[in-house]
Amino acid sequence: AVQVERDRAELARLQAENGALVENANLARLLNLPPGTRVWPAEEAADPGSPAEAGTEATDLEAQVTEALQQRPDILALQSRVAAAEAQIKVAGASARPQAMVQGAYDYANPSQRIFPLEGTWRDTWFVAVGVSITAFDGGRNSAAAARAQAQAESAGHLLRDSRQRVRQEVTARWLDLRTARASLEVATRSVLAAQEDVRVSQDRYRTG
Image 1 (tube, rainbow, N blue to C red):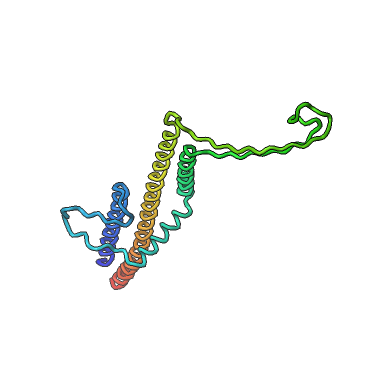
Image 2 (image 1 turned 90 degrees about the vertical axis):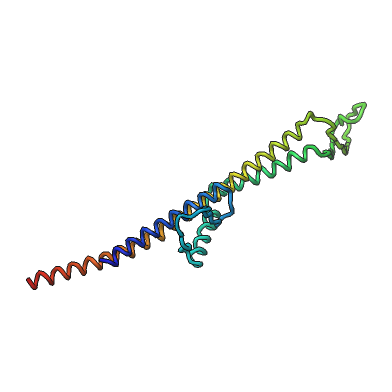
């Protein structure tokens, strides 16, 4: 019975520690801190002790987070939005540069519309044209388009980083829940064994009167 009570207390401690780790991850996300950063209060009411995660468990958790970031469709969609926004920046910047044009054509007709006076014979004609255009003044339209594209790219980048941190937090929370559930299963197993022992003792007492 003492062992069961101790296991329950240990389970409660583990749940509290997991809750602290989840909240720490959420705080790090809100503060835009790097993943894995531990935030400690300036004045501690009590010594929280060292984290219970072992090196192997931390490696497993990081592998789960990496897999989630590679497979989550919302993350993939945001990555595509960021790539599209970055491409739009290049397009907006290219419109302010000199534009070159090359054009060519060949025509074989009867009569040829390019030869005067018109004659009722088959004639072939061709032409090649090369042009360069430079925008001297556009009223700030190109610079505004570039600034808008830059702002959209930054917004998409911030959203992608926040979503990645949210995914990391979700995976961390579920991973800690799984660890707690496994500990709960072990505690429940020992509780069943203790209950079976109580039944055996009670039966022995009953048989001895």
